Image 1 (cartoon, rainbow, N blue to C red):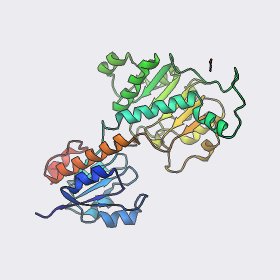
Image 2 (cartoon, protein in one colour):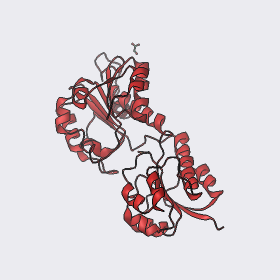
Image 3 (cartoon, rainbow, N blue to C red):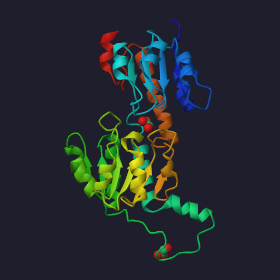
Image 4 (cartoon, rainbow, N blue to C red):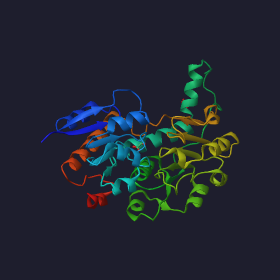
Length: 327
Ligand code: GLV
Ligand code: GLV
């Protein structure tokens, strides 16, 4: 039997590519950038499987360009808001994502941002490099204490729960909102369930961990900033459009909240102009899963989903097992 043909739309860690190459013919996008739409449609054509990035629109047009021999499109990401699940199911194409392997890395990033904003790490670094550090001073660059405060977790899935667990070491009180209360999580962390508005009123740190769906778009907008504490710090490691970026910039400018740490943006890689000049925003370039270990593990997981689907099985991290009935 001839080997299956697989496209990977960006360079990923070499070991994961090598793993896939043991069994398949693999082509990797040679450019250090996303493929343009035309390049993606052309290079995906005729493949049995495609490994896509969160920057690739995985829609009906792509699926039709790949062709009916395609068994799976495996996202190299936990988020799958770039994928049209209904279109894939209709065509009998499996979709998969990479949960679990990036949970700790992303929770660490949420903490990096919380600490950086509260303790003014990025702002201080800039001042120091500019030669403006003139010596220790009792009232210089103060920020809110992190330990002992209340952390609000919006979306207590895998990453939200991992972020909450880290708060135990900071003696923080944890409140959370989710589609339904989670007793095991409450037992493990002492977290208390609150409706979103009550969480926003109560929390000193608010960390977003919901997937992007039509229901979570602009979940945090002008009204929500209006009910947060003036001392609140908002952190977003989920997806940019969960926050209304213009409303956020205004809330930061007017002192409606104290600070924000962002890893994701509404129109990536474009960042709202008004945010760029704000000293109380820490802006990271979508690095949530960006550790050596995690990016390699994401590669193995996506590769394994591809191999399983090519072998005629439902892949382990399948987003639409119902596609099996459509083949
Ligand atoms: C990163 O944002 C991911 O969804 O994996
Ligand atoms: C600070 O550096 C202190 O010693 O209190």
